[in-house]
Amino acid sequence: MARPMWTGVLTFGLVSVPVALYTATQSHDVHFHQLQRGTSDRVRNKRVNERTGKEVDYADIVKGYEVTEGEYVVVEPDELEQISPGRSRTIDIAGFVDLADVDPIFFDKTYYLGPRGREYQKVYALLVEALEHAGKAGLAMFAMRGKEYLTAVRSEGGLLELHTMHFADEVRDPHSEVGDLPEKVKLSPQEVKTAEQLIGMLAIEWKPDEWHDTYEEQVKKLVQDKLAGREIAVSAGPAPEATNVIDLMDALRRSLETAHKDGPAEQPSKTRPDQTPAARASRSPKPTGGKKSTATKASTAAKTTKRASATGKQQLSQLTKAELYKRATDLDIPHRSTMTRDELQHALEQAGRSQRAAS
Image (cartoon, rainbow, N blue to C red; front, side, top):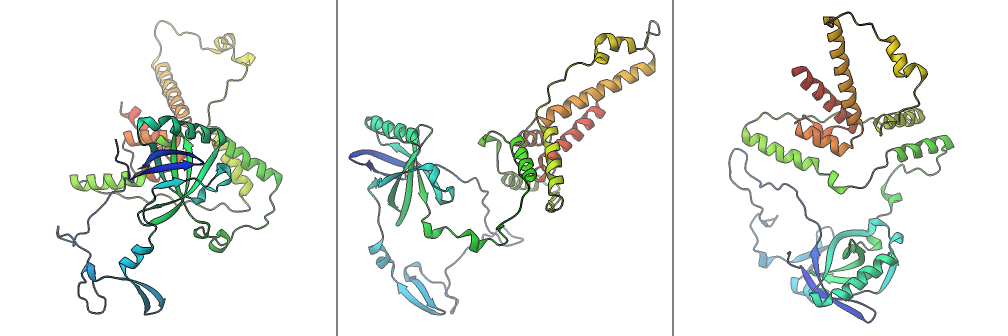
């Protein structure tokens, strides 16, 4: 079991439950040391006085708030410590809000809240159940590690989660940050309907295990390849092209066609009269005797290969991008992390054709 990073009491109204706070996420970033080129010597950062160039001892460092260029208000560490919010002993829920009313942009980091002992499980379970049914989150101010946070406590998957949140003045106004935002754009009903159809056809289930950090995989592979002395080949892949406004409907239609092609196979239509077994038999060539000719054998083999290729293509078209990427990884297809879903399918089809030709 993980060690809690904070322990205290969660209260709402007259109800209280001792809880423990745990980190909910972790980073898998690959970390490097800085070395001097051509050596294995580590490079260290030092605190240096920029005027004298001499190293400064940590005890001689104070904080300075710049008022004007070159003019500072000096603040001592103990002065900051005196006004520090310290460490909260309780999480006092001030009120409950509908989760649907909270814009996700306000959420920052997530922690797990667990009961601090078996004897508190009933009260804890009560709050989990009630919050889940109500679809609400409890808001509370909470101090930890010398900083005060606005937090939201919600129920998720049979336990409580605590989210630290941004204050309103920390969220930037998009209209002052983002240029060229559309104001009033005239869209035809057909354009909107086609775009909605495309969104509906590309709708998928949320399966977090299917999504992974391909850059991290590339970095690890780069390290392993260099360690093994293998040659490194890097490809940036083709740059995506912006959709021209004039070609918008054409791009939407072609996207729909691609989505139709990549979607589940359609149900077979009713059999036409000329597709019945009897009709097919009437068109079949008459047997030439005891043995099949070489041409017939070659034709049959070609048809079999073609059917196998078509079946393989159909199977690939029904896979998600994550599933295609896994197959590409198994086959060690180069530059796979830069490929789109269609490019992954094409590369797998080519690899399949190469394997069949080799066999």
